[in-house]
Image (tube, rainbow, N blue to C red; front, side, top):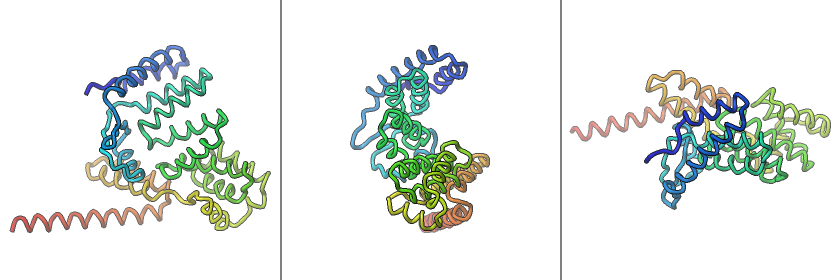
Length: 291
């Protein structure tokens, strides 16, 4: 199967973006996107049995399988399609064509639904287009899928703004505290904290267990997905097994940032125990076959 684009193709187009040459970047990206669209229409017909994705790494694939529980065969496309459409969306934003930027980012999410940066950028586009409902829904979708603390914090900041708009001060206060813990220093997080202190000081000062309880009563989880942390730590374990200590450490740091040191340690112990049990079962099975 001949792929329509390569990482080098996208990198060359991005170099024009970095240099501020939007016109040249737009032409290159439009050409690449046209080739990708035509190729996908011909080669990647989705069915009830099969779906095509361009996950960035093994973690994204594992996380998608565990979170989405998609029973279909997942076919990996080894081309940076999500990155291509995200770059095209950036061009459309610079060209002040938000509808086209929305369409490009929807394609980026379609090819890699586990990339929360795409989801958060798409949420902001919908908000700019006046669709607050889609903005909130995309932000909520990040909570379950976030594999890094910053993405989760920005999602909570968005939801906190939504709750304040709806006069739900205590859930907003809970979102503000979670966002500040996960993504301190982010402008969006600080904006929510400032607005909360001005508009709902009583909620801002309320006991944490109370505001977290009220947040969960709305259906928004007050803690990050253990599934994401488990996927990160499983990938860390696999990387360590192959001697890739850098990747193993990076996955572990992300898991700790997401759920905290104590929870991460407990999950690591659980994974290690599970791996040991599987190894024992395999050894016992091999011994039985040899007998």
